[in-house]
Length: 197
Image (tube, rainbow, N blue to C red):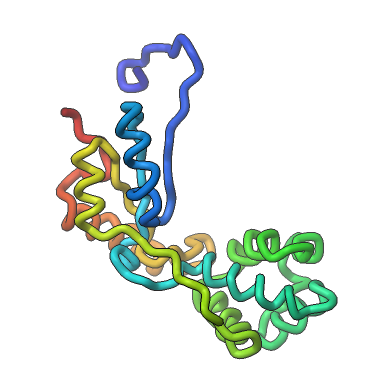
């Protein structure tokens, strides 16, 4: 309908999933397949098939541990940022977001380059340790190919999940183009475009 310019007669929705987590393959795919609902999965290509933290998951995990130890979250965040050569009070909305780890992550990450985020997480890791948390697993390329055959669109979501607005133009281009190239190399040309059966 969109391609033909036809209006919709009832509300519509698009089903998308970010980051390429394996639980989409294990849980969502069977349900969506059974109901005939198409969906798109955007993958962080450097993490496909690897057991490695995605940046937002790792920061949340570490901050959640830190919040358990901090009596005053704002004071803890301020010290943490200072130790990482950052200033918490220069991050818009940071004081209000300090109420819980999730709010803190969603406020901090869009303001940092990947290098700054890595530095912040290294300081946190030294302070609270990673612990025994299990790393969320991602799909393998074989799983993604199976999903594509079942009607999923597989799209690229950068190589390493950086916040593009905080990176140089060259780094941003490499993240986007490199991710798209790898997705197409592994899954075929036009893998970002739903294949018509």
